[in-house]
Image 1 (tube, chains in turn orange, yellow):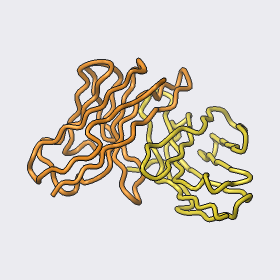
Image 2 (image 1 turned 180 degrees about the vertical axis):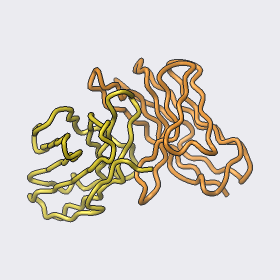
Image 3 (image 1 turned 60 degrees about the horizontal axis):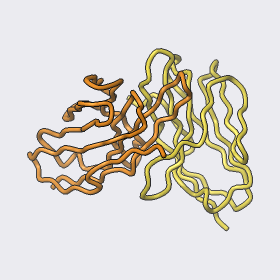
Image 4 (image 1 turned 45 degrees about the horizontal axis):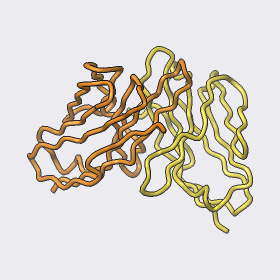
Length: 114
Length: 111
């Protein structure tokens, strides 16, 4: 069964610290995405990738880096975490228009930056 | 930079009633649309896609797309309390697989 797995599910970080959020998919999807969800803003796209080795900036990339070392894994990196990055982060894979493939989401990571 | 606007922000309907959601895009390149539902504490789950003008019906759900006016809507008939959730539209353009989401509509269905 198609699945996207995020880790950790919950994370508390200190201001100025480095945070890495991980995402794994076994669906053999080329595209992967990182979003953050905040009340009143919906889901905002941070970074996305078309395949191993590729990363693209989304709509709100400032303060975030992404890494796609393999087809299965896509990480979101906060080099210097700030309280404004407190949010729920979702990873998704899919989104291939040619095959009518809706992005498939993980269960989310709740990040608190103190 | 939200290019997909949703309305209303929240909606309350009685059980058995009709719930309707609207999305308008400000980017004429957006040609592919999906509707998602998210229950509390879970990730969003895709309900249906619509890529062509007109109506698309799947069970109690009907989506409508008008590319000329950049408008897409979702209608749920015979709403159930289990339909209470956050609903999003998502859009992708004709030349990229970048997928952007609207701001969401919170639906409450009361028994």
